[in-house]
Image: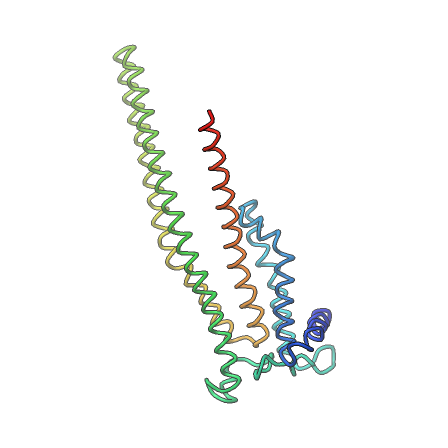
Length: 268
């Protein structure tokens, strides 16, 4: 923990000439950005779906950092000495205080209460952005699944008809067998559509519920020290922005690839 405190203190001293008392708060934000930059390769791999573990590692690796942040601004002493970080502030609010303590100092709209309200407003904006993107992604996934199911069903029907016609040209028995085969294929295609419909319904429900979990960050931010809340809102905003950027790059690459393939077909 002492290494973490020393790093935040150094960053705070570097920013102090510009940000005065809020330098340590800015140092926490900067420290969070450095952590997320280090984890960006894992986040990129998780977005591509490289391995199931890749999606879990960025979250797991941040837990110790969040725990250190929480402990650093909750402990009165560090290594037997007074914790100097507790004396630092974000505007009027001490970084080690929680929302309940801020309410006790001046009420909801007191000097410290307003700092927490500002933090909550940022958390809510990030959560709303995340929820909107989550619903859009769920709707897109459902539409893609429906289109894939329709394409599979149409392909199965055409294949069954072609097989029946070809076999009917040989013998009556073979024609009957072809019909049976067609029926089996059609049944298989229908089963696939049923499963896909269930998956669509599940995605629809998850698309409505999961984005709302983003607002749970508000509860956490109200219960932890202000410094931990700053870390939380910074890393959450980074996650949403990072995913939006990766999705933008993916969509742009697909558009370029589609344009190039269309140009090649035109040339042929």
